[in-house]
Amino acid sequence: FATTLQLTLTTTLDGCLVGSRDFGWIMCVGSLTAVAQVSALRSVAARAGTLPAATGLSLVFGTFVARLAFYAAISSTRVLAGGGPLGRALRRRREASSPKGG
Image (cartoon, rainbow, N blue to C red; front, top):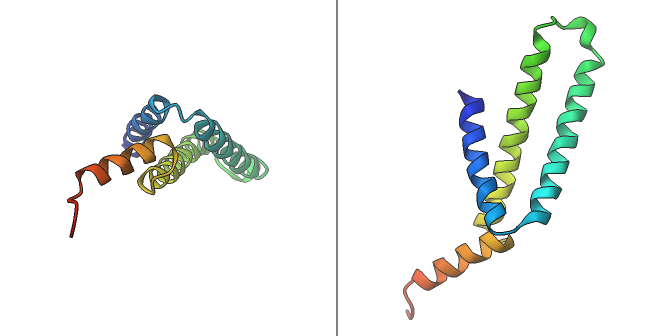
């Protein structure tokens, strides 16, 4: 369930980032999270003799969910903080809808 939910949320967020043409961010964060996932899997593979054979596939899915969760968290934080094209658009929309004066 967690994998499906995370995949759905991350795909939606990624689609929004693609729509805003934030390709540099997508490539940078996607590459960094892929390297982190491969590093985690390599460290587990070094101890593969001590783990049951069925554990391997669970670890692949587990690290994939963690990768997606990190990607979604850092990208969402960036957008909500007003960074990147999507964040700037969101900030302009908030400013336009906020009451003027005081």
